[in-house]
Amino acid sequence: MTEHDGGAGGAAAGDGGIESGVRAAVADQFGATMADLERLVRIPSVSWPAFDPAHVAASAEAIADLLRDTGVFDVVDIRRAPIAGTEGADAPELGQPAVVARREPRNGRPTVLLYAHHDVQPPGKDEDWDTPPFEPTERNGRLYGRGAADDKAGVMAHIGAIRALAAAAEAAGHELDLGIALFIEGEEEWASQSFGNFLRENRDLLSADAIIVADSSNWDIETPALTVALRGAVAFNMTVRTLDHALHSGMHGGAVPDAMLAAVRLLDTLWAPDGSVAVEGLVEAEIDTPEYDEARLREESGLLDGVSAIGTGEILSRVWAKPAITVTGIDAPDVANASNTLIPAVRVRISARIAPGQDPEAAFDALRRHLEAHAPYGARVSFESGDTGQAFQVDTSGWAVAEVRGAMADAWEKQPVDIGVGGSIPFIAELVDEFPAAQILVTGVEDPDGRAHSPNESLHIESFRKSLLTEALFLARVDARGR
Image (cartoon, rainbow, N blue to C red):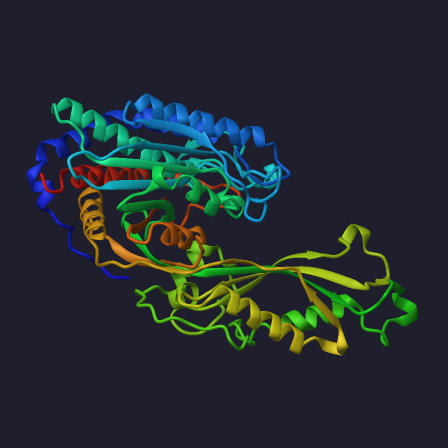
């Protein structure tokens, strides 16, 4: 983590009237912004196949209406693209609906593409929530609800910033020259399966000089952050088989290894005794990390008393710069149906995060080689094709980074920090491929207690206001560049 002085500064000095108007508009409109956010949270726009896609469509329509109401855009549309691998079919399978919008730049100004996603994770069990997941509830300065932080607040940060900029420009009698494009995706929580095709089909609509991806976190509720490193991802299913049929455990237990025994022992080889990854071929990266002690880790993660942290080295290096492996699912009889049986086959889901700089296909190969080599008792292992996502590191030398750091410092009244994130945003690599000259800024509205993807997900409201103001100031300063 590195603290930074405020950004370029020249644009701010030249357009102080616009910036004061932006600040006033953000404050005046914030109640309406929160009301719109709550309306979006009430739409259960889960993009997973088992859920009603009509809700994702309704969410897209609601966002398109909000964008049209700004009066800023030349084009606002809802579009879909073929899912990867189905493009050549007579009737390709389409991804979930995304919202796109664009206004063309004027007088040589840059264009900024604003990305967020309007789909959400499944809510899980209602009983795990303190309040209903799709009934936004405010308490103790936070808004609770599925998608309140991830990522409908990102959507409303974009819309709120555009509204504030437009209102400030109108009040000052100033014509906006900035180009603005929006891409509000509808399937980020289901692997962005049509993302690459969508970019290619809508390249002219989305082309930009700078891209803001509003899907990350701040350092804490008082300190803004720019995400400069993201781990990559590899996920796959593995089946372990030892028998051609199930057996009575009393008749053959002790002589015949069942698949569960083999799977447990095989999975255990993935980690060293201290919990660090023990797979040859998975690499680490060198990333500067700030001071972050185990007490803060325990507070932010909910680690139970007496349960130790795992891994070696600085804590943040373990989650930003080193690989991690998690078994996220096991297909086996549940306890309610557990008979006295030796199981012939077990299927597991393995999810790995890989360090920035490692190729995900090479990481998948390393994991597969390790598992094949360590299968106990001659157990047979087979793999279903892995899902992979590229890691990402930001080039922080461009003008857009300087401008966003300056906007963060002024909006939060505190210097921003550069952070890594242990999670992955694989589609950023596709943005880089399609728009190689664009500067990419990974920002966000979340905080360490936001619990995205978990029960009781929430948004810290004051942090959200500052994030919205940051983006509005950034857009105002980019609009003023060269004036």
